[in-house]
Image (cartoon, rainbow, N blue to C red):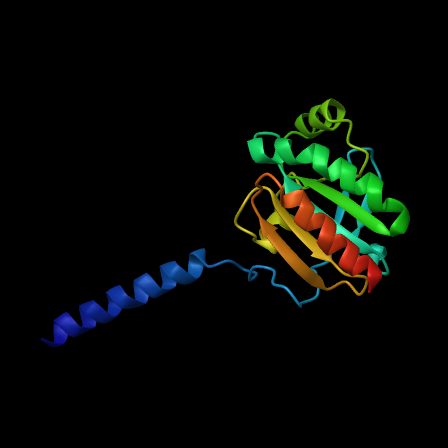
Length: 170
């Protein structure tokens, strides 16, 4: 009986160790917390740092060229960028493709007018850990996450529009 308890204890310890090994290093980003800072190279070359956007409302959209809903959302993001840019909105599209040429092709195809940042090593998307593609994070002027959206469905841009307006008015 003693050997069985020792064996069971070893098994339980192994299972616990395995679970810890696969646990995310960072917890998923949550509303009403500081947005995790990052610096990423833009498709056009220079790096952009989230913390440098403090004082503006920021919409961060994580996307990939292979994601159908991401492609569907692009024209709406362009319209939001155009509509609210002068009011202080910064829209950042973070592409997670391995090959930046895929992001460049989509930027050209949809004539994206907002910065496309490259997260080819997936460090930022892992840090935000939103569990869906596309994923959108709205950040207020103080750098706090105010809204999270996982996935995309028709009409979601109306929700973005309303939430952006509310944050710009604050």
